[in-house]
Each structure stands twice: as structure tokens, then as C-alpha cells.
Length: 394
Ligand SMILES: C[C@H](O)[C@H](O)CC(=O)C(=O)O
Ligand SMILES: [Mg+2]
Image 1 (cartoon, rainbow, N blue to C red):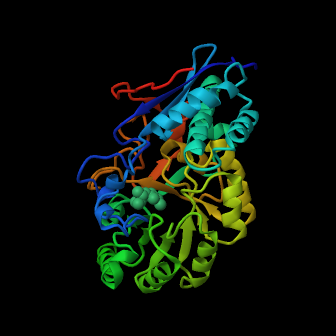
Image 2: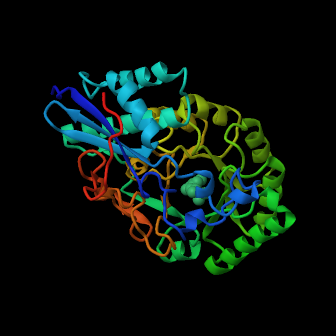
């Protein structure tokens, strides 16, 4: 069957939550004194928005085929990513067959390599790649997970990220990952507060519920090691993104230092097969956590995942909503998924990219049946009530 060619690529920006999940209003758990690499500056300690964590906003990429079918995707990247999509990447898609995603990815990556490789440019490439897979699914009237090889199990199981693992347990999740609140600049007192918070949560959730810490690149190897040792008796399952994503040597050291049985995880700010190859070959972690909207999209994630499989490592994507769900259900080495709790409390389960998508499935009792994904493409629509802005055209 010959599919219609790609006619047009468009990029928009959107504000307010959604794919840029740090772009939340006041009082949200995700911006409440969370340890970051900027916490060494007291003026940026209380709020991540104060140093600009939400400065980019959401990027929406639309790809229209000649028959009028539109595929779309959302990721983080906002206006600068919209510029890259419209002025640079669109040329590699328009007039091409939507089945040519390998060649399109290769051309997007190597044409931007001199200013890209990681970060914003790869977010933009990821957005285009995901919109292309959405278009392919819509043209073939199949869910993306069918195009990726089909489901290897009949449901997804989730852990929840948020400030209330006790609530996550009530909601049926398999574990709860909390943001670490105090970084090295808050000294021994901060470290004791971190441990006290973990102890408090352990007393609420009982012995067997998974508890994890997300350290959002805030620590150094020494602090992370001391924290891990102190948290071991409280059953911390994993310590996540403890140090800078550029410090592969530090991760390798941390993995050697943590108590036996505790896992080291990282990778949400890593990109492409080459970045993940460093993490895997240097034995930096136990689980890699690519964000599907930031690592290069699904086309690249398939390569990253195969590499991880060959190294005997799990791939549990960071956030990524439907883009993660359609991938995780197809891989044996992705046995569970993350659910980011985007309710401000978080005391309710709301869709991860709320309010930007319509039809975005949510776990029920911490699980999601594969049938929840049985719609063409990624199975979601853009919420027409959200104002979209197209800052550039080509
Ligand atoms: C809670 C973390 O600081 C971050 O906002 C989300 C994240 O890294 C994760 O879900 O993983
Ligand atoms: Mg994380």
C-alpha cells in the first residue's frame, strides 16, 4: 500500500503544564524546594521556576500528509525548538514518504550535529519523529505499539512520581518516587532532613512498597554515596539522576559505592544511542531512563533499547506519557513504566500531559490495559481549548 506523501510540517508553542510539566502554577509539589544543581545559590533554592525551569514551554509538531491526515506530537522546547523545526528540519520531511523515518532521522541528526547532539535540538528532532510515528499510525489505522512490534504483555504497571507515595500506594501503584528536597549546600542538617522525610514516608507506606529518590542532578558523588548508605536501612530502592549527566565517571563510581541491592538510575537528560552507549559501557547505572520526547524520539529509542538489552539493562522511560506507554508495552526489558503525578497535591490521578491532550489514558489501580492504547497513532488529540501559537513559518 502506498501512503500519501508528507505535505507540510508546522510547529507551535503552548503554555501551561502538558509536555513542559514543570510549567505549573504556584503551590504545585513539583516546584517546592526541590534540590537541583542551582540549589547552591540560596536565591534559587525554593523554586525551580525562579531559575527558569519552565522557560521553554511546550512544542507541538504537526505533520500533514497529502490526503489531509495530520500526525502530531508534544514535547518540551517551545519557541526555539519551533524555529529549528520550521526553518531547518521541515525540509527533510516535506515531499517524502512517511515510511522513510530512518532516513529522515539520520538527515535531521547529521544536518544539525554541528550545533545539536543533545538538549534542545534533540527535543525538536524527537518532536518531529513522534509526530511522524503518529502520522504513520493514523494513515495505517493502527496504534503505534503495533508498528513497534506489538505488545509483549497485556497491561502496563506503573510506579508514581510525586510528593505523596502514600497516596500512590492507595491508588495501586507499585512504588513512589519522591523529589529530594535538600542538596549538598544545605549541609549535614539538610541530609538529616532528607533522611527524616524518607523515614516518615516509609512509616506511612510500610516495608514492601518501593520508595525511590529523584535527585535531579543536584548532588556530588560523595554526598550521593553518604545519602545512599544512610537510606539503605529505610529500603530505598533506587537513587536517580544523583549527579550531572555529563559525569559518566561519577556515575560509574556511585554505582560501585551504593549499598548492595540499591539501584542507580539515570538518563532522562541523556540523548541518542551514543550518549546511552557511554552510560552502558561505563556501567554507570542499573536502569536507563530516556525521555521519549528528549532522547531522539521512538526511532532512536529502539536503538537505545536494543543496546541496553544487550548490556542486560532495563529501560524505564522518564515521563513521556503516551509516547512511553506505546513503547514500554512492546519491550521485554521495560517491565514497568513511570507515571508522573501532575495533580498539584498530588492527591488525584490526572493525565500526565494534562491539559494539552484529549483522550490521554491514565492508569487505573496502577495499571493500564493494552486495549487503552488501541487507537490509531498515539491515540490522543490536541485539546482545541488550549491556545497554540505559531511563531515561525517556512
Ligand atoms: C521530580 C523531579 O525533580 C522531576 O521534576 C521529574 C523527574 O525527574 C522524573 O519524573 O523522573
Ligand atoms: Mg528523574
